Image (cartoon, rainbow, N blue to C red):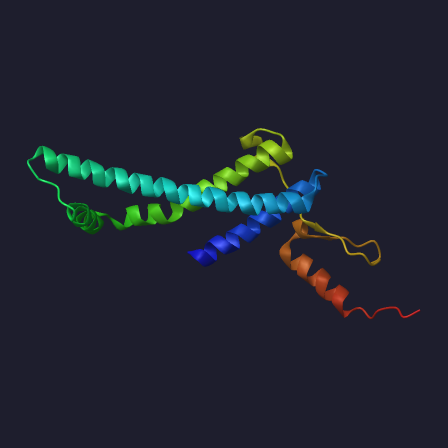
Length: 167
């Protein structure tokens, strides 16, 4: 899962960079803020999962104590092992993807409120093109990825095959 989180973190940084540059804000600063806030929200999601699991173990212990069970030092471990055996794979999938969902919603909210300064739902409809401009003159060509990824790659390939002018 770490690789997936890393790839998503890079995509979030590019998303923030493209959004900030499209509205005329400091793009690099917002890319760093987006990547760091993704990590913060991801760890917040993990702490929420730990709280949920701890609460379920405590609730199981309280139910057993009501039935006359006397807790010991090893009772928490035994209950955790029993509850892990009883958990479905759907709950495990939820625990795996919940931090990602929390992080994505958190950074989308930050993007909406602080970069775009619009409502959350309206910001999801906002189209942000990623425009790459090179420092050299390329016959006024701007490589725009909103045209399609294959056209973007073919434009880069054509540009890399041009011979430089040695005037």
